[in-house]
Image 1 (tube, rainbow, N blue to C red):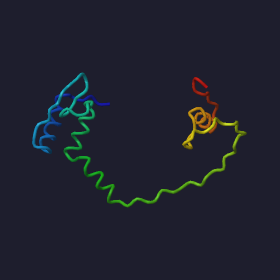
Image 2: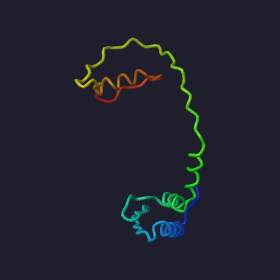
Image 3: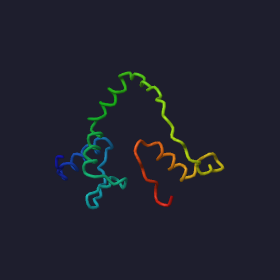
Image 4: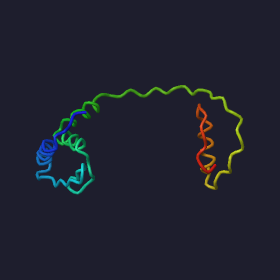
Length: 121
């Protein structure tokens, strides 16, 4: 992983942000996190990626992907699964769902390897 120069990344981001929005961003630093215009805190690498998006480097890539037609995904044939002898399950709740205990027992039975039940069972 390449090391990022904080001053260079912030200068490039400020230039790209200014070109896009017409004003300089308000960048607040708290430790290694940066808040842009009071928004969500980002890492320096995220700001570098945001700079690329603002400058339009990544904007061309989605346009190329949208132009190419996509083929329909192939569906795999359903494999028959041998069922084990099932134990009586806990009663289902009134709305048709399963209780957590029944859900976990069912989920663990469907795995290929031996699993422990969660604590409290």
